[in-house]
Length: 176
Length: 210
View 1 (cartoon, rainbow over the protein chains, first blue to last red):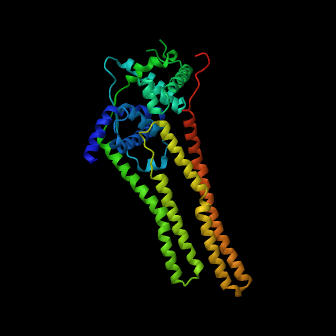
View 2 (view 1 turned 30 degrees about the horizontal axis):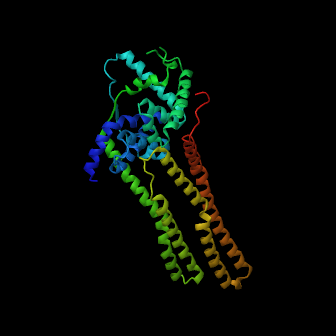
View 3 (view 1 turned 135 degrees about the vertical axis):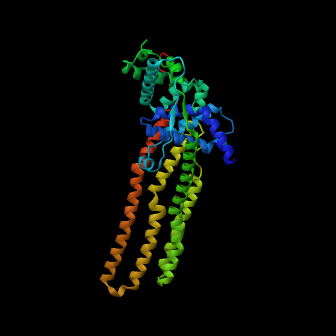
């Protein structure tokens, strides 16, 4: 595939699925440096694999497959990263209109606590919960993870209970 | 309403209403391209280091043998060096040239990553069979032949032969230990991690009463 065509495809893909990549990276890392490393690693895999995407899986299923399979097997390579990695600026836009300052702060805190609880789950449970929160159907989740739909249902119920328990441990959260 | 007591399903809206995050694409693309080039360079130099050195050493060994008028046993090491290079080339062709496809379902990706790690462990644990033992045998043959030719030196020759062979064995033991260390420190934890992830994707029975 010509480089220009690949770049154009990559840009379009990033505009549609970049948010999913960032969510996955945030769920599996604690520090901003690690998050950036994971994002770059996922996007590198996307860059390599995108020309081979043949539409057999839906675009969002494909995006989550690449993001999750990269994030789950990612390992920190501190010495290499510090020596060679450059900073790629990540800009956060304002949240959806309609929220004032305190509401926005409260929402940000709830989201951060949600991520904190997700990070404490086993890695595959974290993936299940994230896919569920992103509104993927059981069938789509099964396609991403490579397990049966029944298994998705069973595991998801257990993971949700575990997440609720983890959240109750920190139930002094701000009210919405 | 206290969010701590909410069902995770209730957070879908909040989750999906996360601040939209945008990435500055141009520097990111440059970084991705740079990483791609670096990856290709790393793979190239790894191959040069591991396979190229053995391939270069074989003719160099023969050249050294001719230059120093060495006995025939000296030349036995050259085919062993070639064997090591060919073994690594074939192994790489069969295993590492099939990178796991990141767009596979997670379970299949984990299985292929686990297979890669297990193969690497096997390769390093067996390094004495495919590399160190053949090298030791040819070096022992060369030293034995040299010692036989110098047998007039008596015990001194025997001592020199034993010490040289001891040094060679010591060097090979260090190489073997380094390989085992890499297995213990790097690959075994990785294997365990991948196995744990795979096990967490195995079928589960629904809880009683559900």
